[in-house]
Image 1: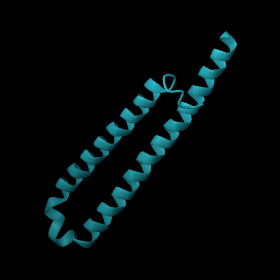
Image 2 (image 1 turned 45 degrees about the horizontal axis):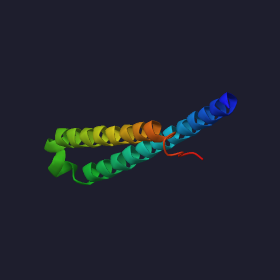
Image 3 (image 1 turned 45 degrees about the vertical axis):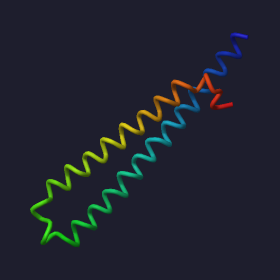
Length: 89
């Protein structure tokens, strides 16, 4: 029984690592898309928004921090409940 429990725990941790890669990929995709959108906005409106560049930087920084906190909390939740709910079976 102990061997089966170790095998299951090993399987769950491998699957958790896979989910972690997906979460990091999702965060990278979000940051990339947001960076592109902000770049396009700044490129088109640079003459009128040049003075507000630091506000854009602060806004994008806050968005990235909030998204990172959200992604980390999703991973933490999966890790906390993966054995409880038999998430990977």
